[in-house]
Image (tube, rainbow, N blue to C red):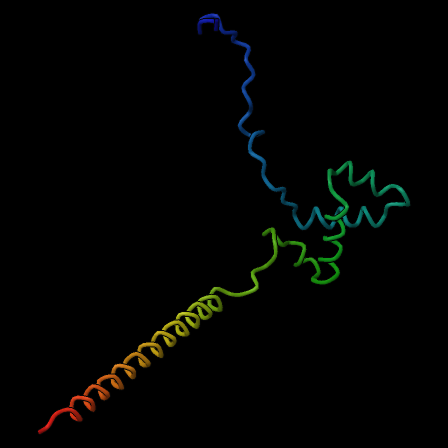
Length: 135
């Protein structure tokens, strides 16, 4: 039998709202450059200790090195996660309009073919009516 509400203990654990929501970490360009410089200064076996202390992963360090090598400091300031869009919104709109145009042209060809068939059928009926008509 459950206890009435008045007898419920007051020391229940309530989760902190900030701890419940996980967010992606963002690193500033200055911080990335500092970590890269520290990683380059590390002797054999010290890199793991640096990564653990800074709570980083080796693939983050690898990506930052690659970005610095290919694009300089500007590439390190990339803030949006994930790959870049392969097409601009204008290109996507053009593709959409081209597909719509192709569908419309297919419908037009079908309609023209149907009208052509109707004309042929009508001319055949006229021929058959004119051939049987004694006048």
